[in-house]
Image (cartoon, rainbow, N blue to C red):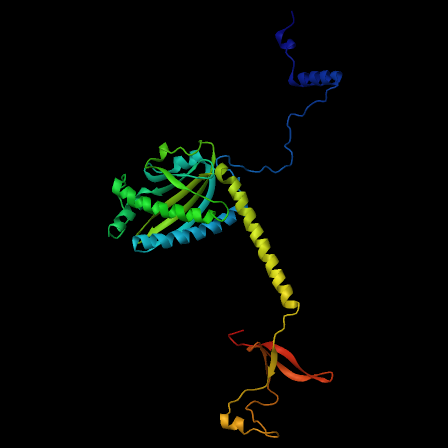
Length: 331
């Protein structure tokens, strides 16, 4: 029997043997290191998916900024004080993340999205709710340090605020879909909220409330799948309206350039005369003006000073050369 040291092949001998085997089998030897293809890898966060296009999001920002202003006005009237509501953000995320980022206590109203399928919700910071209650009872509406559940009376007061919010959000969507959104349930613990499965993508619109000396957040959450068709309709209507406005503007310009006549006059100067002077005027009289013959003329369009120019000749006819735009505030 041969010595065991002689029976062990070296690494070079192993590689040589493998190469011989590959060649006999018609298999090309594979390199030890496979270089990655020169391609860009696009990052995608599955926890924060982007299913809504940038154009639609920009449109939504404009709509909800208007909604925030309307909510501010209505809540100010309701509380008889100063309330400022501003749009904070519009995000897409999984329903699981939304629930996990909510505090233990919030004033949550489940909303039936009729005629759309499914439910949404309006969630308000509990501290903000308690400040609203204090303001409603005649207090200053200060920020509350103690966070607790609302009583039945307090729930009724804050519920009126939520109805205002829901009404204004619904009004924003109404031109594009007839909405009859109603509150179907009220809760104060987000962990029991069940408007979608945890993996579902939701549209989360966050507002910041400033009421006198307190502030807090309100969130409007709705499954993207429930409003996806409406968003398409929403965006399509916006584009259609813009196209109609462009067409109307074009038609108006065509009409203006197509034959509408305006009165244009060149005015050298203006002066005042008494009625007696006017009555006694006769052929050959000379009206003395304050301006010099070299002064610019006023070019008056439909009774308003629009330009100024110089008097001259164009061929055999008198003409005015426009040399500037009038500084008249009515221009």
